[in-house]
Image 1 (spheres, rainbow over the protein chains, first blue to last red):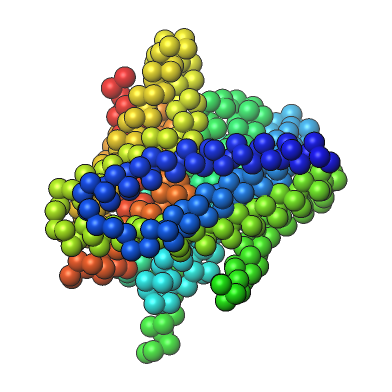
Image 2 (image 1 turned 180 degrees about the horizontal axis):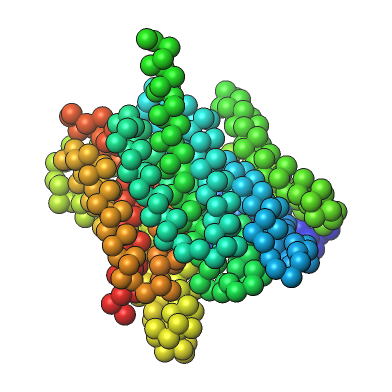
Length: 257
Length: 244
């Protein structure tokens, strides 16, 4: 028990150090410009410093907890689900044999995005600025659905072995058309939501899934085909948020007319 | 102080609900689809507790540290009126937050392996290391440039799609000419550059700028910096693969 606690403490210190190293260049940039260029004291330096410290503890605990609980299990499941023995197909593999993989990809994409801290930050800000016109929760749901669909489709692509760029370019064309018909207010937020979905929680699990799939599906090379899932996860939220905004606007229009 | 504890508790509960879906997915798949018991239930529960507490601290620090500093710097720069310094700051922030990003380091190493296997570079430690480092610097530079362009856009009030859509077209054209090995890595590198600390800071900066400049709407003009930061790395990584 004591051994386990010491072990945990050592790991936590490592996570703290890693987070501190991430924050350091950012803090140095901010402090440098604040002192040398802006040359005005901050209003609440102590409060802000404590805030930074909270962020550091928060991320360290968050990563530590994921490492302890979810990453090992999630990665194990990704390999188990893609294992040919589990797939249990005949001599000729059919894309339908991977049904559980697609479902797992969808569910894990949805649930990890919902817990993604960066998305939470952007959603809080959007709700604050729009004066509540954009609600944090539906926005996060839309983004999560986008990621879920994207990763499931990305898994399907690895199984059938189609070219990555065909999917991505089609996605871009859809985004361009949606942009033309979308309310101006949502466009920036929608584009941003593509970049925020893939950080701490999603990337490790999704990468494990991509590697598992591309190393077990016959004819795939993990070095070449394992990539690309992240790209799906950053493209489809844009489509989902723009679609959500379009529907929301039309519903309001129909109500008022 | 006693009042501050009530939102803390509320946040703790809401963090738990944010995390509950992952727990549900993992448990249901493990028990019903794979049909194996959960290997280590205590770690799972304890780890979940840590994640919930961590998320709560993060949100608290966000409201208290990252958002205020981003906004306060945006206001100060807008008041100072020096475009040059603002652009230098924007570039430095983008570069500094990306160059040390662990996810990017991992992608760089992977990319070096792919390049060595594909025969694009010599298959030894030396050339793989320098390839990975070059890629990292390229991506960090491109993110710095992205934030710079994004900030300039907010100040000038250019519509976001006018810049993003040509960016997409650029990516499509480059995809045709870039070596096939690099395309997947390039597409993924767009997603990994924006870390948990960068996103709130950069968002607050953009929104703060848009609200302190006359004629800008924070909702229409304030967002979009992250979008640039996920677009330019794709272009630059493909260019890197084409040149080397």
